[in-house]
Length: 327
Image (cartoon, rainbow, N blue to C red; front, side, top):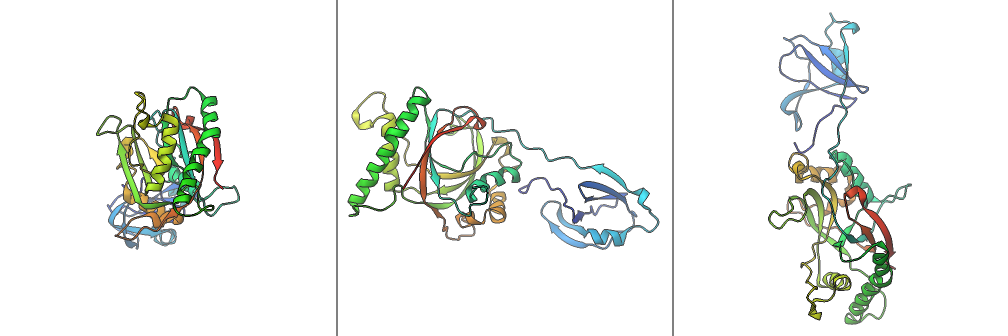
């Protein structure tokens, strides 16, 4: 269940141990139906297969050739097409407003300019047959900003004020720590483990309909001060005693989402064990973020900038409006 649908590859064949009139090998993209004697099983290796069950014989292609019934000829072989894997429908949830995303350091940049976090998003979509990948790796600072009139006004606030208030908080931190210069604009984000969950809008405080997998990150007083500054900039300071000003939810819950899916696919498709296996196989740079078997988590990334996204609509509608890189 955790690994999804199993499709044989070119060099391997699985044979059902139930006595039957045929077995199937997948060779070169087509399936070969190969009649066999109902009273004789080809010599194979008994394997524990997590996809097909325990104790089913597993055969290599060379073993099939050596085990073919001598009374059969090539005309007895029948070819059938292998059905293509179908992706899940795209995420149905409709998002809102504008969002501020933190950009994280990327490692192992490839020839196309893609880093390890970019590849984690696209590889997860392929691994779990998702309708679409998260468009860019990010940690959400603020989501669903809905009190701004239009893109032009939001861009003006972002370019004029967002960087300024972040630098102001960073300067206060430097003075407190006795550093007149240097230091990071935004403190690094360290992982506490991974999480796979599901949420339904309006159920137990949920605000979205989705399943997701994430690397959970830790907050701190310094991180909270930065989120407070951004929230007060966009919504007003609750200390001002204005009726339309409300306090932000606390504490901040930073996380790096790996993939999203519709909620009904939590369990049948997205599970913690499946995500652990995926990270170990495809995302070695994220493996130290996995809190497995009581192992200490040793994953941290620097924050390289902040971006403004229009997140109204479906995930396919999201659009990056601007970015600011931290020096």
